[in-house]
Length: 414
Image 1: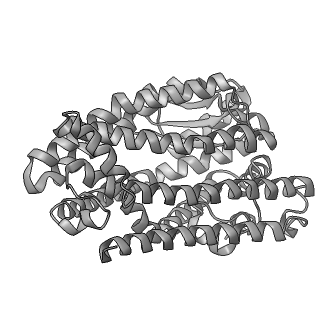
Image 2: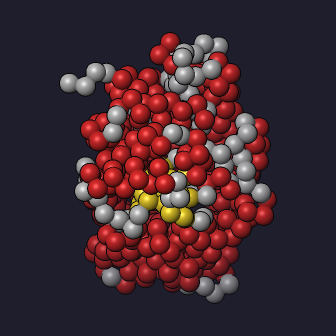
C-alpha cells in the first residue's frame, strides 16, 4: 500500500468512526431521557409522545449506523478495491471512448451505488416509518416516485454530465471555469423551474380553501411586503403524516408551500406564524445568501479538481492506474465529502443562526407564543426528539435544539 492510498484509507476510516461515534452519542442521550419529558414541555407533550420520539430517533440511528459502514465499504471497493478499474476496463474493451465512456462508467457506478442503498430507503419507508404510524406511501406510489426520479436524472443530469466531461477533455486547463458557468446556470434555471414544472409532477399543489386561514395569510403577506405566485397546500399526506412547510423558487415562480398535514393539525394563528417564519427566510435574504455561498464553494471545488486532475498522485491515492476525466469525477465525488465532513458544524451553525433570525422575524409580525405552540405541536406530531445530544446537535443540526428555540420564543419581548 502506497502512502497516498494509506492516507485515503485512514481518512475514510476516521470519518466513518467519527460518524458512528456521533450516532452512538445521540442514541445514548435520547435513550437516557426517554422516560421523562423535559420540564419546559411537560404541559404540552405527553410522556407517550416523548417516548415515541425517542424510540423513533433510536430506530433511525440504528439503520443509519449500518448505512454508514456500508457506504465506507462501497467507497473502498470502488477505489482501492478495483471496482472503478473493473467497470472502466469493461467498457474500454467494448470500444467506448471519450464522453460516451465517461457516461457509461459513471452510470454503472452510480446506479450500482443507488441499488446498494435502495434497501435502506425501503426499510426506512415501509418498516420504520410504518412502525411509528407515519408512512402512507403505497408500493405503487413509491415505485412511481423512483421511476420519475430516474427519468429526471436521465433527462436533466445526463446532458449536464456530458457537457462537463466534454469540457474537461477539450477546454484546456481552465475547463473548470467553463464547467462552473454551465453548472451554475443549470442550477439557477432548475431553481426557477422546480416549483412550476418539476414539483407538480410528484405532488398536487392547491390554493388555500380555508377562508379564515386564507384571510390571515393574505394579511400577513401584505404586512411583510411579499409578492409571489401564492401560498399553496401540498398533498404531503399521500406519502407521510409528517407536517412541514418550505419556501421555494425565485422571481415570479417563488412559492410558499404548506403540507396539508400541517394545515389540518395547527390552528390558523399557528399556521400564520409558521408562514411568517418562512417569509422571514426570504425577507432576510437567506435564500440568496445560500445560493451565493453554494456558487462560491462549487467554484472553489471545481478549481481544486482542475488542479488535481493534473497531479498523478491524485489518481494513485485512489488506486486508479489510468487517469481520465470521468475517473477524476468519480474519485472527487468520493473524496470531497470526506474533507467537507469536518466543516459540517460551520454550516450547521450558520443554518441555526438563520433559523433564529427567521423566528425573530416571525415574532415581529405574529405572536411569538403562536410560533412556539406551532413548533411544539410539530415536534410532537413529527416525533422529533426534545433531548438530543449536545455534541451531535452542534455537529449536524440545521435547526436549533427544541429547548433553546422555544425558550427564546417564550422570553418576554424587549
